[in-house]
Picture 1 (cartoon, rainbow, N blue to C red):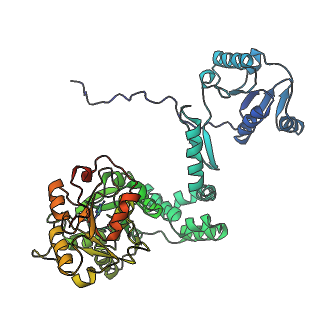
Picture 2: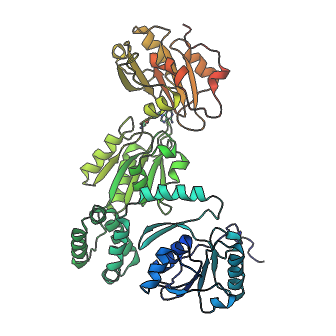
Picture 3: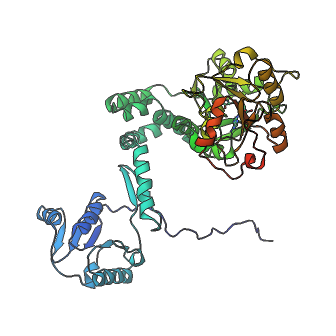
Length: 488
Ligand code: SAH
């Protein structure tokens, strides 16, 4: 029987994306105005020999014709003019002329573009971010030129001009690197270390001479038989929203070979890691440790020693209740190089997305971060230090021990009416915020089925949420719950 698993690709794209080699080819531009001039220049920059057909030329085209950079045929367009052309662009202000160029080109099977008229065009011209030899082309298939421009400005800002220089450098040393590293995998590793390492940074910083020197040294040194030393990046993935990642986190995720991640890391964030990167779930849920901490530590050391770039991706910030310190102690002990990339910690994310400033001139001069993790049914915290006025307390891992935390704070002197909020899945589409008082919140939380990950915020700042809440995800539990914010 025939294999029915073969999937026939769906024709869901309006255009085929390609880059044409026009060097030495004949390009025809019909029209003599500024738009035609712009098209002629684009063709010329790609090395085409350009002929412009138009009774009259604008100043720029006149000049280019005068110095012989292009050929001018001073006449009205005739279908026969296209013979010999390999690409045609019509940019006149006369729709009839544009139409006759389009139909003549189609008859001759010459690719044709009519300015601002995709219906008449057999190809469209993308919006281009130019870092020659790097070119990034954007098309929305004509759906939204505004969006294309917006994307272009975003990408323009993201990609330094010097990336073009980096590509030039790679091109120049490509042949040598092939001789030096016959093995494709070794060669890829070499170029990765150039692009992402000190040499790449030199080029981006404009120190090209030093970069060339360093690259020459690298390529003439004895071939490396052992794989290059790996590295571990301890990365804070933030509270869950992908757009709250730092740019640094995104960059290291995109050159990772392996990603070790916790349960707190959302799939949307994991998706941003390099496609080829191996993903290993190492867990870390209360009572459900997928891998014991020592094994995680040992695994990181092992992978790094194999020359891998290991991203250890954690929720929030790696140094805030994330055992980041312990993990890199092991790395340091084994001489494995590492970098720590901070992330937005849950308290900061929850404060922002619940409309609760953690400090405020009128309400709280300090903010304390603590963990409400239960150990043998109790919580070991400095209660007198937490039960202070004009202070915000943010309690991580606070769902299970919520009742104890609230009771202890009351016992040590905070009024029963002290406002507090439980923020579940902060920053995510499923965020729920439950507000109450130290006395009422535990029962309310039980009633609404709040569960981890959730963060407890205690202090007068919680009252500001009435005015400052701005994020409205799908369902809000508190609207279903009795309004007991200030009830004792
Ligand atoms: N390193 C992390 C904290 C890990 S401890 C950080 O800096 O945020 C795990 C606890 O963090 C959870 O029990 C919960 O209290 C809190 N937390 C993490 N993500 C959260 C989120 N999106 N919303 C609410 N709390 C969160």
